[in-house]
Length: 106
Length: 234
Image (tube, rainbow over all chains, first blue to last red; front, side, top):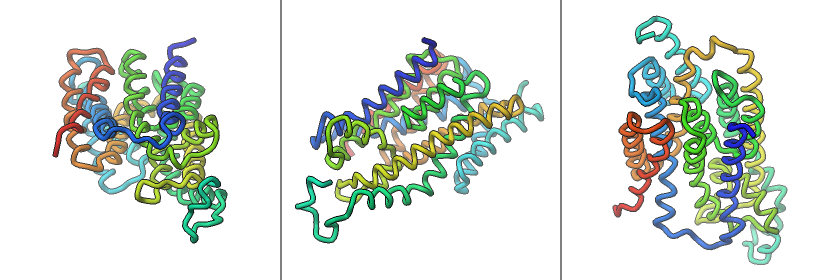
């Protein structure tokens, strides 16, 4: 089995188990409040980490390049409540434009 | 629902589950358009550059049905991260479905295999649509909304993957900026409290500090520690 399929199946099986744990195993019992508050903050913490590393990370280096322009345009588009596909296309176009113009390093 | 009919308030008596399912499905349609567009984005990214390819992407959308985790896998792999880091990042992102699943557990009735299947239709949007306030959830609305959103997500992925293959090289020119833009869009939907904002700032800081010292993917997983701010008393 290829690495890709291993990941697809592991993430799929893991997510299905997480989603079903409450309804299948726990019934109407509740999670302890501290667990609930920590688990609830995992998504914002990881998503922010993903924003930061996909904007500034290149391998193990931190760089300022065309992606910053793309993300800045995305932030403006999101503030104007643009649909997500428009946001993504604008971000890609902005980064491509800055790259094409050779403002960043090639 | 049938089991609780005798304790249902009179005005809700005799509301067939099919009616609630249709109501949930109709409510989900505007959200399904947005979810479908996220799916298109995932499909395009999955077939461009060193993406995972059409069939794995479609399978992932069908069985994982969680945008942020799927984008995280694509991004960690694209950055040259290890499979273990990609899997860990995805499952940590989906850990929020544990308390969400617990919250709807009482509404999802039937034998265990059926409860398992119903639970798979829980995503942030269907959960919100099913909420009736005071911690009560409507199973019919959850299922109706969940099915519409699932179709939009999987259909969007397929459209994006097929379209993305035709776009070819020009589209990859600015593609590396698509990931942070997507994560930013997803992050904004999660910033619903002060604690969430604190966890986000701390998570980003932890990740950036670790980038030079750890293999790609590890900074994302380590950012999970930022969620411990949830233990701080306010």
